[in-house]
Each structure stands twice: as C-alpha cells, then as structure tokens.
Image (cartoon, rainbow, N blue to C red; front, side):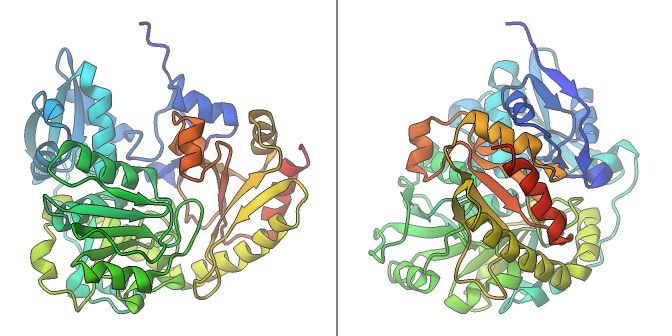
Length: 462
C-alpha cells in the first residue's frame, strides 16, 4: 500500500522541548489520527522528538524499525514483562553508551512496528528529548541537584522525600509501580474512567501474562473486592469525567483483602487533594502537567505512604529514572506552582459557571469534593452533538492551544475522545461513559475574561 503520510512542521507550545503540538482544526485531529498529516514534534510519548527521531534513523536496519528508549534495563523490562510473548520473540535490543550517556535501541521487524510502538508509548520508556540532544552533542551527563524529591515532598501532604521517586514520564511511573506491586496470580481493580494508556497497561497485563483478569469498575459501590485483588488503581478526579470517588472507603475495602491502593492525582495536583489523608498507599503524578505548568518538561513522580512497610524494596525505579536536565527544569518550574495553580482553579470556577449556563452546552463535568476549589479542568458536551457541530465549535474557538495534554499555565482545549480513543466504536465509548465529541478544557492562569471570549467565538458558530 502506498504510504500517504505527510510529515508537517507544527506550531509547538513550550519551545524546543515543548510537549504539545497545536491542532488548530478538528480536521487536523482527524488527519493526525489517520496518519495523513503527522506533526514532526508533539507529545513525546506519541511523536518522537526530532532529536530522538535522528538517533532512531542512525540505527535503522533494512526490514526493521528502530525505537530509542531510555536504557537497556528499561528495554529488557518492557520486552520481558509487558509486550506479548510473540512480539517479544521478534525484538532485538542493542545498548549504547556515548560520553557516559546510556540508551538502547529496540529493533523489530517493520510489520510489528506499530504494535511495539504502542507498548513503548504505554510504558513511557521513550528516550527523552533533552537526553537525545545530549547524546547527539556528545555532552557528558550533568549532575542533578538532588533537591527535587524534597521540593516535591513539601507539596504532597504526608509524604517523605526518602520515599519519593522521579521518573522519565508519568506513564513510566505508573508502569513501574504497577509492575512492582502487582504479583502474578493477583488481579488489579481499576475504578472509574482513567487515562487511556493506564487503561491499556492494566488490560494488556492480564491478557498477556500470569495475572488474573483486571476488573474495571465504572464506579465504586462499596462492595467487597475479590479476595485475589493485589492492587486497586484510580484517578482522583477521574479523566476526563472528573468524578471524585470515596477514597477512604476504597482503602478500607482494599486493605481488607490485603490489596494496596495507588492513586493517580495528576488532575487534582497536591494543591487540591491529599490522598494520604485518606489512607492511600501510593500517589503518582505526571509532573509534565500542572506541577511543571510550562509545557516544557516530561516526567512523573511517585510517593509512598511513609507508613507503607518496605516501600524502598518494592519499587525498582532505577531503569525509569528522570533525566538530570528534566529534574532541573521541573525544580525551576515548581517555584510558582502554588500561585499558578490557585489562579487556574479560580479561573476554572468562572469558566465552569459560564458553561453550565450556556444554552449550547448539554452537560458539564466538574469535580466536586476537592480542596482549595475544584481544580483547573472542566469537560463538557455540546447540545445535539455531531461532527459538524463539534467542527464548528472547535475550529472557531480562538483558544490558542488546542491539542493533547493539560495543566499548562495557558488554557488548552482538547477533543478528548477523538485524540485518545479515535478508533474505538461508539458502543465502546458509551461503555466508558464517553461521547465521541466530548471536549476537555484545561483552564490556564491568564485573564479569564479572555478565555470566556475565546469560548464564545466557538459557541457563537453553533
């Protein structure tokens, strides 16, 4: 079949290492998903940064595709413990070291490249763009300050810097934690809607390896968990429907069967929710989002409850560790976190009320039960949803940053299901409580009057 893929140079938010490309129109989103027009730079787990792509090109073999990942240990872990055995048998791992910079290349026959690419994306072990630039420039590994874990722990109430780990990406943090805690013969329970790559990790593990089938619950109904439950996972609030589950009761039920509770608190951030206050065992964040807030950092962080026994022995994080440059960037970006996130929440409250009262909006999803406001993210459905109406709104909405990600200090609009679940059927989306044209808005810290005016520009076209 003829390759009709066209590589385009997009506008990127966040500079040279920006993590979001801007998809101006709904047709841009569709063309990206159907690989007719693919940005050369975008969210790094989905679109290899040009520096990473250059390294991959250097290592390509005839008949094979090449994927650059953080290091040999991460590559071995994903091939041995996550990808399907059939796919693993086709993979070849090659390790390299330049000026002290270690990385690895995963070679796979071209016909299996898409499958391996998705597994690498899910597990978050992609080679970091700043590290790739360092490798290409033959620059030695810089020394980290060693202060980031303390800075993060000061934000997450009840945490301890000695039980805090920083990762290459938010998904690497989730992948490593799940694989460290969930034992063969046990099952995971996932509560509520969650980010699509988290969902895929839990689904694939039980399909491919010696775990009991993951139990996906739309809501927690205070029922007992199965006795073979080893891990309970949920997002607070859930993504993108922004529900806040009864964490205290979930913890009680989980601990009754000997299971641990892992909370992804990325959307809430430490400013709006403190899972350790409710007895959670582990907290994970994508630091790429509101902790950084500048759209120029990729990373994740994991906190263990200080009362959790043997936490340091359970988590094998070395292969998935955050790069020193990313640590420095995040440490710098954290300086204005409290003021920034508070302003974003104030603005989101205004935007939520506006949407709830607008005649062209059918439903608004906003979290309830957080602290210091209700967060910075709001999702909504247009009245009489259709591709035509979604296109009219999205294309004419003048919010500058449209595309994946959230938590940036500037507002970001995302057609959630079209970007994260484009190929899912309507029935699958319905089973997840999603609509195909659901919009998710991450409200920024800019003047909220401008944000409202941008929304009005799109809504007036309906």
